[in-house]
Length: 382
Image (tube, rainbow, N blue to C red):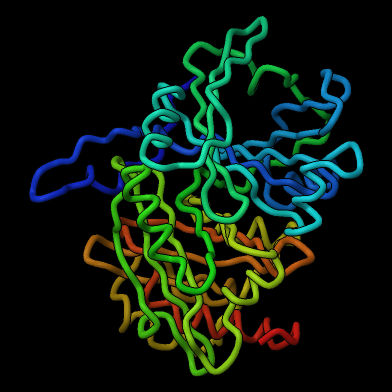
């Protein structure tokens, strides 16, 4: 497997002024698996709307009897879409409770057994004991632990495997292969947890997985006239895996986090942020394929240059697309958010381009959350 890694954007964790050994080295995000009602139709959507390419398939034709999965990729991003083949299954119950949503966030590691041992001895609840699967292309070792809600983390060791994805999968090469939209890698994944649970899961990622806190936002940072939330961003040692964790905060009306938890049926992954190196071209491609984005008022752009300074992009090219800009001490970023991609107002995507910035768009929070509130008002859930 070619060593395709996201840029390193955070230093090794530091404790008491000295570098702290990284007991859980993660090479990056290996794949993200969604449990969905119809994997075949969802695969078509991700191909058509987002430009993901077909990679692998597993199901009845490969010997599976309980599920069917399609694997799609774009850049370094791999998405697995899985549906049950029978009633009253664990996958089906997950869909009944949550709707379509992320079940697995898998990390690429050099040693899946060590990753399991290091996390479980620090208190992680085991999900999958280290398991070796093999075929004619070699073998893969996977292990896993539970995290917030019904979300699980898997550790995938594939050094000795040359197959298309994992043992049990076959190459999927349909005639329909739309062009890429320019998406490159997973920048971060945001989790929503319940009232007063954020610090519990921040502690989990710090103590069980060795992550460090990059930044914290409270209800003064992330609030509008009606709603508020709090967030802390956790990062692994090399900065290739970042998890902002959100919880609701008191407001006059129901926040997006409360709406998510109500409709998802508990804590889970709220959105995936995926990177591009040309957000204007990517957003135009996605828009033309039917992806719908949240929009901020046109007035957002009137004083944009005063707020963020000089940028390479023409503001008049960003305005009609609704792309947001924010700056930190390292540079600036451009970002935009899709509307929810599922019937329930839960999972959505962020498209992000970083030009030096390591932050998460704090300067856009108010405009963004007001845009979300307008959507909530339309849905009658504000």
